[in-house]
Each structure stands twice: as C-alpha cells, then as structure tokens.
Length: 344
Picture 1: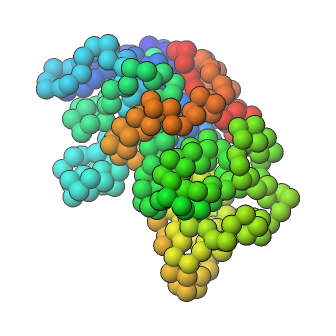
Picture 2: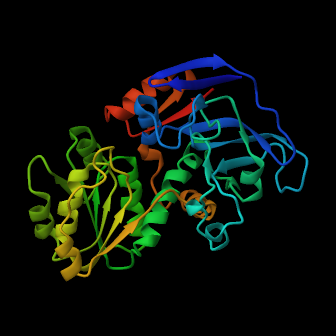
Picture 3: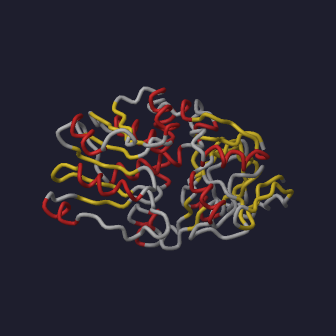
C-alpha cells in the first residue's frame, strides 16, 4: 500500500509498504479521509514525547471497513466508521471510571501505532474491544467525520470547565480548534463568545465566517478590549500553544471563573509565571484537558450529523496523500484552516 512514512525530523517519504495483516480481534480500514492536526506538523518538525519512529502519522480519520478479524465484534465489511485514536487498556481505575483518556497504558493511533496517512490502517484489538471504532451516521461525509476527534477534544474541555447557559466565554486562537470551541460553546448555552487572535490570516477568516466578537491583539490590549464587551468572563479557553495568553486570560476572568488548559505549551515554557494571588482571591478554577474519550467522539459525530456546527466551512483544502508535506506547510503558514487528505 501507499503510505507517508516519517523516519526522522522532517524526513517523510511516500512509500510502498506492506498492507497490514488483520489478525483476530482487529479491524482493517480503507482510509477515506484523514485531516492534518497541528500536532502532526509538530511531530514532523520536532517530534513528540509519545511518537515512536518510524511511523505513519494521522489520527483524525474516517474510512470503510475492509476486513474484520475473527472474534466477537459488531462490525461488518463495508461499514462507514470513524476512529477515536486513543486506545485504552479498558481495565484500570481510569478506564473503569469513564475517563479512559487518562489511562496509564494508553497508546495512540498515529503516535504508537500507524495512522491514517496511508491507503489502509489497522485498528488493534484493544481499540476494537474498548469502543474506539464508531459507526458514522448515514448523512455524514467522511471528511466531516474526520473532524469528530478534534471536536471531541473540545467537548472534553468544555465538559470539564462546565460551560453553561448564560456564560461569557473567551477563546484565545482562531484556528480550527478555536472555531470548533466557539460554536460548541454556543451549543452549551454561552451567551457571548469572544475570540482573540493575532494572525492576519486567521483574523480574515474569522471575519469571513461572521465571528461576532473578534479582538485583534496587534491593535488593542485584549484585557481592555474584553472589558468593553462584557462585565465579566466566566470561562477562558486557550486554543493555542502561546504561553503569553495565560496571564491575560487569568486577569480577565471574573470571580469564580474557570480556565481550561486545552493546549500544551512548547518545550521550555512549562513553568511560566502566573499570578497565583488572582487565583486565590477570585477563587478561580483551573482545569487541564487532554485528548478525549470514545464516548465524546460519538457525541461529536451526533453533533456533526445534526449540522449544529458549520464544519464544512472550516475545511478549506482537500489534498492527495502525495501532497501531504504541502498540506503541513499550509497549516503551519495559516494559509489554510482544516486540510484533509481525501485521495490516497
């Protein structure tokens, strides 16, 4: 089969490799769509703590079942499916209590196992057994279903930060995840959603899709600008990896406000200073949010199928597998929003 194999830093080749053998309990997919995550470009340029090389990247994916291994299962050849990439053990306290994304034995498609930038992909048996394969609603396209995983990550963050009716929410970052967060916050009942950005390309796109409250930090101070819109912010979501957004985010929060650390910070910025007194005196709540669960992926599929989120407008580019590195460049340069491989 044809696959994009990453062997080292910025060393990726489109190669002919052996098609995976489908053993008992496993499922083999024919890939139909795989979106490029910012994490994919990070792994291409500088690696990742969980990345094991050589590796076929790609974890935002959907496809058609080509082969089903022997064993108890609920899938048939020809089923249209989306895959939650995190493969938990299924038996640890975290898995049993409903938070398998915290599983200490978690392995991830596209990190520890070969992913979706290939013609075919194998879902290991523990992923099949633990509900990581989700049948797609009939009305949903493959490229839209590929975005269920990033939407599920947003669901995880917003469930943890308890966004509710009437909340005012601030989102730092107007990339694809920022726009998913913006629309999801309205679904959960937020009355005002303010988006903060400094990239000209991102700002132009946000204006194009009609973001109501948009702050350009190259022109105004974000804290002052937020105060002109609202008397208090209930939730702040940094949907970007810029460490400079955390301090103003904490400052603009109202008493008993919530911040969810949705994006990891670059190497070397893990211990940035923040005003602990603001957290203390305002009784702020700080949440971490990492990844998502299979159940949250299923929620995301239902939201997408109901067209509650305008996901099609976020998919600006469809490319072939041969153009994958070009797709990485489009994502890194902000010349595109969601880039999806649909030709393998």
